[in-house]
Image (cartoon, rainbow, N blue to C red; front, side, top):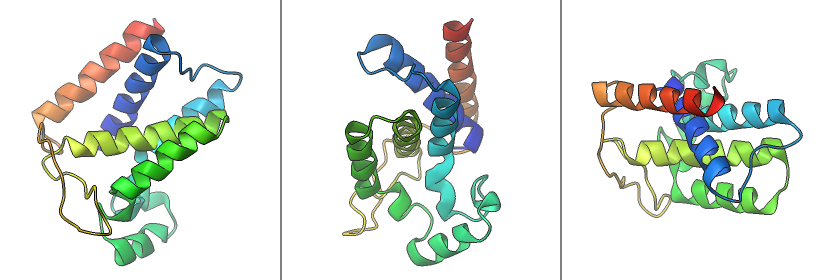
Amino acid sequence: MRYYTHISTACAAALAVDHYTTFSFAGTAPVFTAAGLMLGAVFPDIDETTSWIGRRSRGLAFWVKLIFGHRGLTHSGLAAVIALLALLRFDHAFIDAFCFGFLAHLAGDLFSRSGIPLFYPFTKKRTSFPLYRTGSWIEMLLFAASLVYIAYFLF
């Protein structure tokens, strides 16, 4: 998934969770919430030097990719469990939104053809429920649908 699709689908998912559940992202710090959500939505790709966040990481992406590879530790089930525990443990707008965005990123990549290594570091085998290929028309449709959903709730 491209960075802009990760951001738009994470925002749409956060709006849905906020609207249809008792968990709320609407708090006293909407700027921190929005920043955390968008940063979390792209952060797992810190393991790819050519990604949007990787190009802005001042060399960190190089080292993360060298040590863990792309779609390694930052895309693993272990990272998802840590993000979920942090989401449930902390009561801070930025941290909650970051963790939710992080989890939304992993969910998005789980449905890509490339998948994610859910059981890393035990195995590098990727799990996938293939719905789309990165950059495909289906991804563009997901992007457009998430924008429409966001617009529906905001306007």
